[in-house]
Picture (tube, one colour):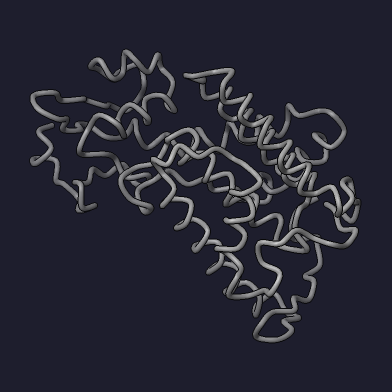
Length: 280
């Protein structure tokens, strides 16, 4: 079921009741950016997905809008109108999600992109199944995905603007795939949602391969060409052809990193470097 088929629900905010999508959307977009900025500040912290992270993120996103921001729901609300978890068990289920997430992370110190996508998909589905908040669960869950990507898997660049971003719904087909994947996962079939996340993560991480030269520390130069097969240097050998590992290696070892869009090369301050400056 695509998002376009769902009716806009009124929102009671600190600024009053908002009945129309055009009034709600700018405030929700602002909330999403607050959440992404907060998630990026957590990079390097070593934090994993926990109940405290979920509540901190929601509070950061929605405190300007809702009195209940950062507090779990007290009513029978669930995805598609079905309450899977009673409200009094939400905090317990969030703690269980945190425990399971830690186990998933411990199971693979150097996951393949497929394994990474599976973890993100499982965590996202569990969050939506729990449906911890009175509203805004969909948007919060998608920001939480970026916390997992940037903080837990360390797939962040030197700035929020250059870090990889998941574009969920570039078209109606992807939107349908997302909601159909969630519905399948509800019925014990997680493969479709994992495939959706794998495809979206491949797109988010692909620009790493469009850079012709990245200047490394000291005398090291890492040359990244148009495909993984053409890439050279030890960092690429470490990657074993896996773009997630490759992005992580580059983020940790080089002082010039690729922007997450457009295949450009930027310096530590985010300023573009020309082809001649990069030495390619």
